[in-house]
Amino acid sequence: MKRILQLALLDFRIIFRTPLLKSFLLLPLLLFAMVLWFLPSLLDNYPHLKSYLNVFMIVAVVENTQMFSFINSMVLLEEKESGISKAYGTLPLRNRDFILSRFLIPYLITTGLNIALLQLQSLFPIDLQDTIAISVLCGLIVPIYAMSVASLAKDRMQGMIYVKVFNILVLVPLIAYFIPPVYQALFTLFPTHWIFAAVDAAVQGTPIKTMVSTGLIFLGGLGFVVALVFKRRYVA
Image (cartoon, rainbow, N blue to C red; front, top):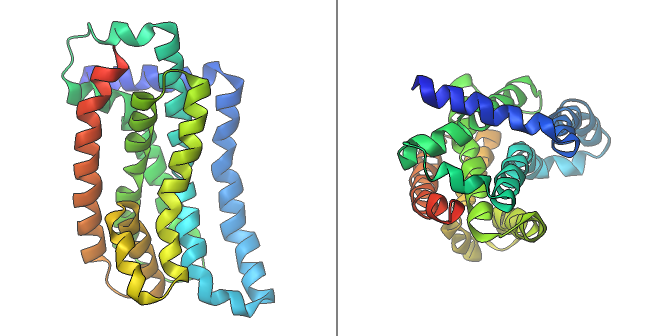
């Protein structure tokens, strides 16, 4: 575990080598400002938008994951371009430990940011237990997203295309909140649907246990499959 933590810290420092990647660290500050100050004012001035509070909060929670989803994707692809990734194939690390070392800190920070966002916002009441459950679930987007992009793209230029595609795929289940209920079940096949459903339930003040449990199964299963492919393609 000590070795994993050392590698995780080393990997995290890579972010600060590139000014462009460092600039993305400002995104959570903008998001917090939007949710804590701009959104309450918007809803006060336009009361008819309050019925879309669930959608606003879904987008906010998911967008909190995009910082490290993008940063980790670009770091991995930069290493792939330079050939550094091949050296990781020689490390005496199990696939699980390798993935932990690459995503532990981004996952924890992303989870922490969503915990802070949900606890600080004043738009709806939510207890700490539900906050942690949603944040833990939502944080899984980061490693799945970054591993998928790094597995599919050959370089950063191609990676930017996949980033745009995945940004759309992550948010596709939002359509379910704007269509007749009879069609909404189609979107349950998207893993992020269960994050959205958990946030929606929290906003409505209803239990989220079923949504979170189902989401963990969906995202956990998807993460397992992506992880099997990731290291083999990443070090190739």
